[in-house]
Image 1 (cartoon, rainbow, N blue to C red):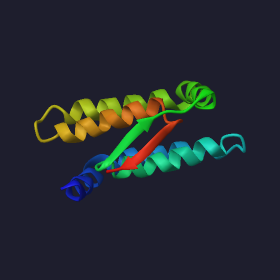
Image 2 (image 1 turned 30 degrees about the horizontal axis):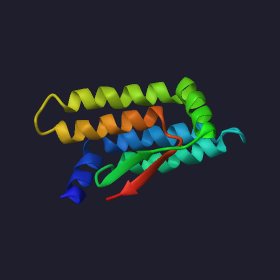
Image 3 (image 1 turned 180 degrees about the horizontal axis):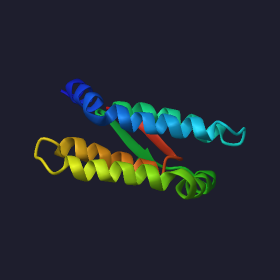
Image 4 (image 1 turned 60 degrees about the vertical axis):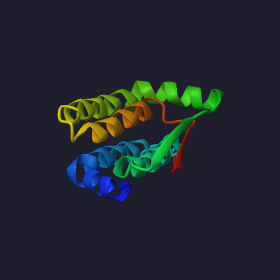
Length: 121
């Protein structure tokens, strides 16, 4: 069932969410300092393309906190707002609620991507 959900997700909007993560990663990679942040964006783009059957566990330390603060100020808020908007639109219909929940999961991830681990169920 999750494969079918991932297929529907990708066709009906997941491709746009994933592309926004890829674009953000490419922008971060323009500078040498931003390459580690860009690499994290590329990892999270794969989650954004196919979010079903994946869980996010949060952890990390002081470095993750510092990177998350910089991330929120520069790139996190626009990505989180994008995911929140799509999540609210998808939750209008009963059929779209599972997809909206995935968008809300990605919105939280967009605010705190560092120190997060992606676990496949």
